[in-house]
Amino acid sequence: MENDCLCDGYAEGRYVLPLLPYDMTALEPLLDAETVSIHHSKHHAAYVHGANIAAETLRKIAAGEEADKWTTSATQNFAFNLGGHLLHSLYWENICPVSLPLPEGKLAEALRTSFGSPECFLSMFRNVCLGVQGCGWGVLGIEPISRRLVIWGVLRHQDVLVPGFRPLLVCDVWEHAYYLRYRNDRAAYLDAFLRQVNWQVVEERFNHCCMCHE
Ligand SMILES: [Fe+2]
Image (cartoon, rainbow, N blue to C red; front, side):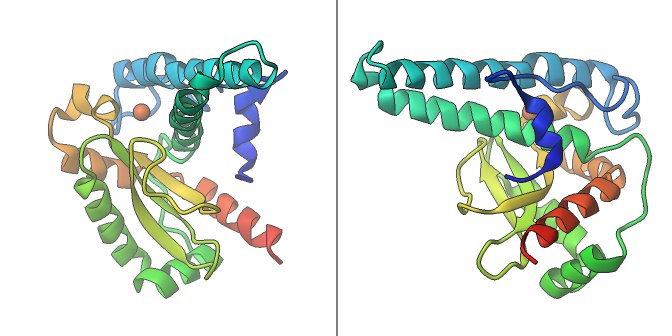
């Protein structure tokens, strides 16, 4: 991961909960303040806490202070919670209080290459998000071998992902992300989400990844 915003999620040897880049009420009409507050201060915070616990357990095992038998469960817990921390950190940054126009320039060109057009990408991304079974994420990112853009339907926080994949746009489709406002209507949440994507941030992530490979 080379996304700059993720630096706010780690300090002094521990994972930390980054501040939201806007007020709790700012994401209307996409999300209400109660959803944002619970999602950030309870769910995201729990993943931060879980990542720290798992990392500490692994440190103790390495130091001989904890039994080896906990290695497997600690690595699994670490992947789940760190994945949650990472994806939520990206999520808060890639939605915004206003509706921005679809990207132009290099990102638009890459979307056209991989999906036909930015509009076609939106439709495919929506379908992938809609089709995630149970808890998971829709993720647009750069596939590390061909360098083309691809969309994944990620299960939980860490399943069905290619190593080295660079996420550019993530959408949380766990029910806690939308249930207070949209109940079981994930499609309505997705329509609102896609109207409030922070394309500026997505474009910055894309440009950053491209720069790192020039
Ligand atoms: Fe979430």
